[in-house]
Amino acid sequence: MYLVVSYWEPVPGREADFDRIGPQVGAVLRQQPGVMLVEVFKSGNKHVAVHGYQDEATYHAIVDNSSGAFVRAVTETRFEEVGRWLGSERGETLPIP
Image 1 (tube, rainbow, N blue to C red):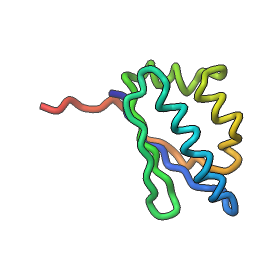
Image 2 (image 1 turned 45 degrees about the vertical axis):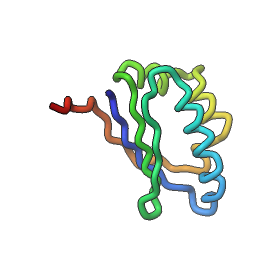
Image 3 (image 1 turned 180 degrees about the vertical axis):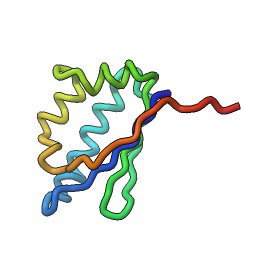
Image 4 (image 1 turned 120 degrees about the horizontal axis):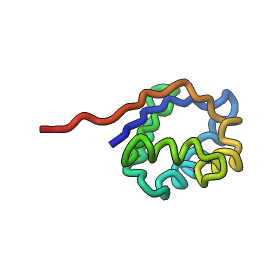
């Protein structure tokens, strides 16, 4: 599995919008073929999004597709106006013996 851990924070004064829009965008991501996991939790003022994909190619096919459902959802909801991306960690998960 290709795992991505992203760190976000609400834009000051837009916390309620962030909390309302974030789950809408997450729901669209969950529906995409090859998405195996989408979970979010709060850590202080940050929101940590953990999402898993079948593989790295699936990840790129979803997040880099400017006409795809996920990118459309981010654009149409104006999510990046209410949330600030702080960074991400990405990689293939290791096999469990």
